[in-house]
Image 1: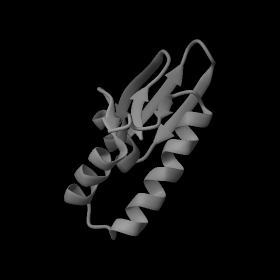
Image 2: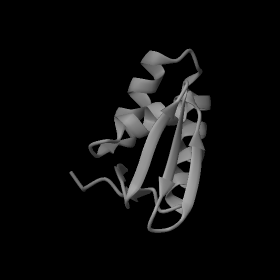
Image 3: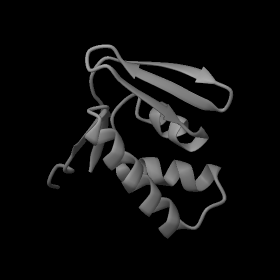
Length: 91
């Protein structure tokens, strides 16, 4: 799966967290330190596996927990039109 940012989201750091707002949609999101790191990572489109590999190298978390939490987080961002989740191209 390829992950890319979507829409006109503005973001600003607030301590370790990130505050995001879509002027177009009137949506507001607050992201934790890990969520903010994911948003940073997808500044340019990345595959799910690329994002997962970076997070596993930077945070002390079991792989299965990381995978499940990143999937849930991306689903939340997708439901708010903040990211696009596209199937990986066929090899």
